[in-house]
Image 1: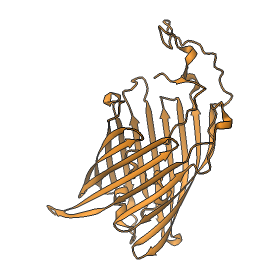
Image 2 (image 1 turned 180 degrees about the vertical axis):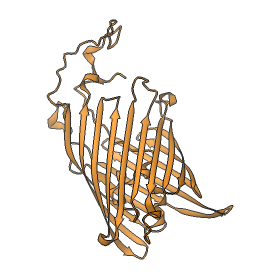
Image 3 (image 1 turned 90 degrees about the vertical axis):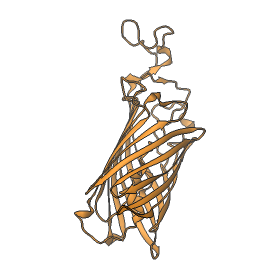
Image 4 (image 1 turned 120 degrees about the vertical axis):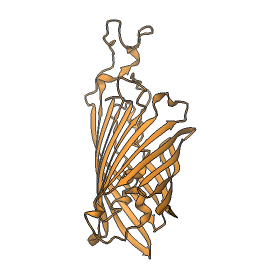
Length: 329
């Protein structure tokens, strides 16, 4: 993959958002910390546009999270690790964050949670992998006939790595039937401006705003199996970037599947199909993004695999956590 860097353009990457965002709920809102009394562990892997460049992945993300509700302090605690690799090492990001959510009872069956996230982020640029404009030969591109890259006059920065504190917050309302929430990430406007030239115009990483909601609707029993449908909606905005996910998941006993539509600011982006299975403590799910934008399906779409572990059978405590969170566990 060739990456052409021009210093007269300020490049800012958006936060990764998983297609199975409900498998990493604390990543969209820290108010989801502790959606069960038992320990809840999730792992997810995303490979975006795998055939765009066969020599290296275009964009790969990984995440793992743990959370649990503690009745004595009426609060949920969580921890998450998130790593992503853009362009096979062009930009690598690692984030570790602690989350906390306090639960307040409004009335019978109605609750409000306030959450906060405190994280540390490290970003590293693979300077030697970049291709600059003065390295491009009109006939041979960036690589000479002898197989060596053309030289560049661009000077290597003194720093190609940055670390910063990242703070986020969120609110979450829920009852036995539905939940709705709002969150904001990067509220401290952290700086990640290693390769920025016009630092006077750089105001830090833009805040990511998210509005989301979902419901759990029982459809009765079919052939002695309980059936539910879980419609959901997510709206995210960060600077000029905007994304909407809308769809639903159908559960029949231990098997579930769903279909979502994702739209970007100015165009259709993807259709997302999900299939999964719950077995004992475990939950497994696979999703595929069928690209509907002008980019086309020739990129290979996107693949996600998530694995969850919910230890309710091990930690047998009476729980009054709403079943409208079942799709998140």
